[in-house]
Image (cartoon, rainbow, N blue to C red; front, side, top):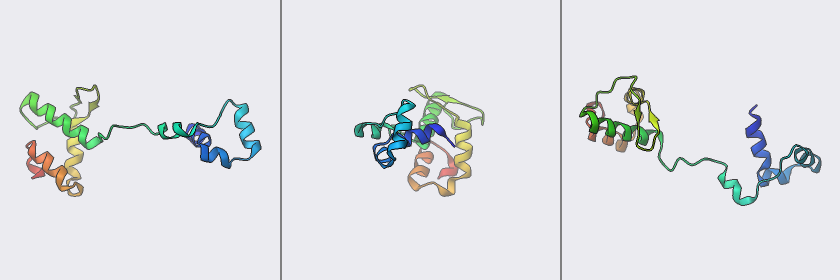
Amino acid sequence: MDVGRWLAKQCQPGTWDALTDGQRQHLEQLGTAPLPPEQEALEKPSRGGFGAFERGLAALAQYKARTGSVTVPRGHVERLEDGTEVKLGVFLSNTKTRRAKLTTDKLAALADLGLNWAA
């Protein structure tokens, strides 16, 4: 059991209110208190709407701009301008393997960068 996740759940206002008085008292003795309602939304970290596929696509575009090629060694790691690292070779290998499940928009974006298997 992930104790940290469990504890975070107990501190949410709705869960805290559902606890018995004794349960709340035990948690308070441990230094735990309920979160204010406005902080409940801050629990989940935001990725800014930039998912794994988009990071991989950005890394491929950056790699192509630098090298002029979309042939990437499997072990290559591309560092994006924001400092994040993308295992670009692994991303391309996995994406190619799963291409039948990709949306037409994603396939088109890959094809626009020059990947023949995405066309």
